[in-house]
Structures are given as structure tokens and as C-alpha cells.
Image (cartoon, rainbow, N blue to C red; front, side, top):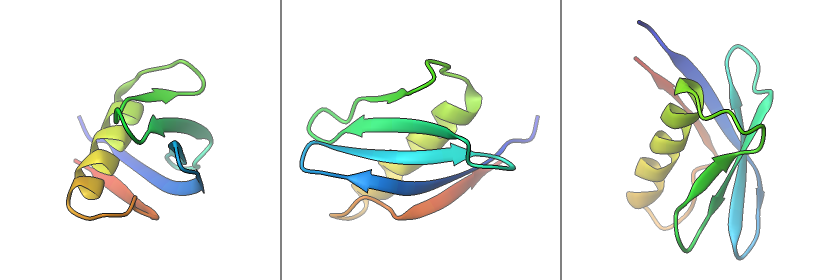
Length: 75
């Protein structure tokens, strides 16, 4: 099974970051609490696209000090 999901940072404040994600259009949103690193999709659907985008964002952020501006997951 192949999966492709793109994501892009749309908002960041002192407590959380928000990303738009999806493929072919980025039409969904996910929010991550910075301190706890807990995330949730705003539409409530924790499907494969959400899990892969969320995981990739966390891995990219763990490698640096800032939240990634965008990226993609492909497998």
C-alpha cells in the first residue's frame, strides 16, 4: 500500500503549532501541543494520513530546534 501526504506549517504560537496536511490537496488540519508533543487532527479522523504526517513532523522537529515549515511523507 502506497501513501503520500504533504504538510505545511500555518500557525505557531508559544504553546502549539498547526499544520495543514493531505494529498493531493492539503485540506485537513492538525494541531500539536509543543510542551507535551501531543497532536490531534481537527476533523477528529486519526487515519493513516494523519499518523504519517504527525510522525514525520515530530521526527523532523526532534532533529532541530524549530518546527518544520513543511515537508512530505512517502512510502
